[in-house]
Structures are given as C-alpha cells and as structure tokens.
Length: 296
Image (cartoon, rainbow, N blue to C red; front, side, top):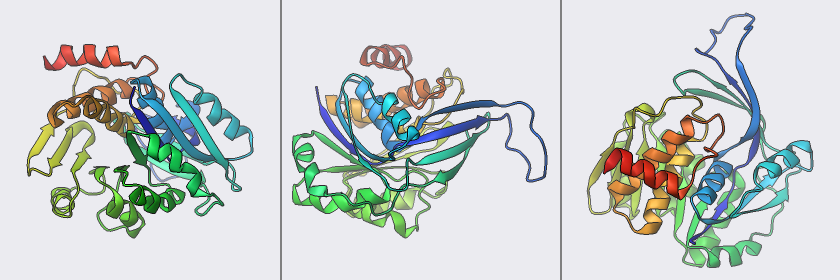
C-alpha cells in the first residue's frame, strides 16, 4: 500500500445547482438542488486516494466549531488518517453555485487563515514516510515547501484555475516537480506547460473539462485524452481532484503516462456522476473494470 501525505484544503460547503446561472437581476428562484457537504481540494484528493488503496494522511485547518466537526465526520474513512490544526478564523466555508454543464461560481463565505500558528517541523516524519507528497495551494501550505526541498521530497501540486500570471501561485510552481492545473482561466495553456518542462519539471498536466486533458512530458511528448461521454453530469465538484487522484493511482503502479491519463479520466467521470466530491462506490476494482470497458 503506497503512502501519500496531503497538506491543505478542507471546507464545509453549501452547494446550489441550477440549470443555468441566474441573471444579475433581482429575482426569486423557487426550485434548485441544495446540499451541504465537505469540499475543497485536499479533502477531495484525500477521500479519492484513500478509496484507491493509498495509505493516506491528510492535514488541514478546521475551526473549533460545528462545521469542523462535520468536516471531520466525512473524513472517517478506511485508509484515511486526518490530522488538523485549529483555525482561529473558524472552518473554511464555500457557497458553490453550479449549472447543468458543471460550471461553478465559488464564493468563499469564510476563508481560512493565511498564516496560522503551526510548527511545520512536526510534519517531517510524515514527509519522510510518504511515497508521494501533495501540497495544495492553501496559503498556509507554502510554508512547508522549503522543508520538502530540504528533505529531498518530490512535490505534486494542483494550481486549479491558474491564469498564468497570479503571483499567489508562484511559490508552488517553483517548488513543484509535478504540476496539474485547469485551462479554465488559461486558454493558451501550452506555452505555460512548455516553460515548466524547460524549467526542469518532470510532468505538467492540464485538464479542460468536457474537452479532456493534456499532458506534456520531460521527453517533449504531448499526450491528449478525451473525456468518456458515457459518464453523465450530476455534479462537477471534485472532478479535478478525482482526475489528479486517478492519475496518481496509475502512476504509483508504474503505468505509462497515457494510461495514467485514462485512469484520471475514469475517476473524474465517476466523480461527476456523484453528488459528492468523490464517488462513494469508487475502488481499485471499479476503476480497473472501467478501464477494461473503455480502453481495452
């Protein structure tokens, strides 16, 4: 069982799903799908990777409040060890407005603290003991990057909807060995990917929603992977984290990059069919079965 350490990103989210985003006018909307559930990038990766058989340790900030208790309750899963520090701002909370195409407007109604009081050296044992280290772009996570480098641990990071110029992301870009992102705010994504490989990154992967995903390797090879149309959209929350996790599952087995991309496509497809940030039916057996169905 491979070990993964994930730092950053758990929230308690309110999710509203409409056929279309509302127009910017005063109005009353009488019908929608509404749910409250765990969210955020670290939680999505931790839940998905634990279901894929990784021995998963996940750290995040939560508040000393009822929302923190709810977040913790969602993370009581086999193979998943959740550790936390108390955020004086309280548990991070988002309001996500979704449409039928999986597009999202995310409003941070209670952001987490940027600089909580944490002794980062306490994570050294987890870092040394892990096969893979995933550092998410929560602001407090950037303080562990120098420790990862000192311990010679490779860093996987997910830039999400990076626009190619936001300085907030630069520490994570500089430190990472493996970079994932989406093209939502970076339609001209290829120059960024080329630059990162030229700067010594080992792999860059960019997801494009319904248009699939692209990988660029240090050997200078482009790999394009379309979506699987058979998966029907219910909720896109967590799809990017599921893609990342499916890719890492294949990578941990030693599969070639194309096959890793295909596993990411499967896990993200299964995710969008669920109302949660990961599909509760997910397992290694299921993704291997789905791979045989769609790619063999």
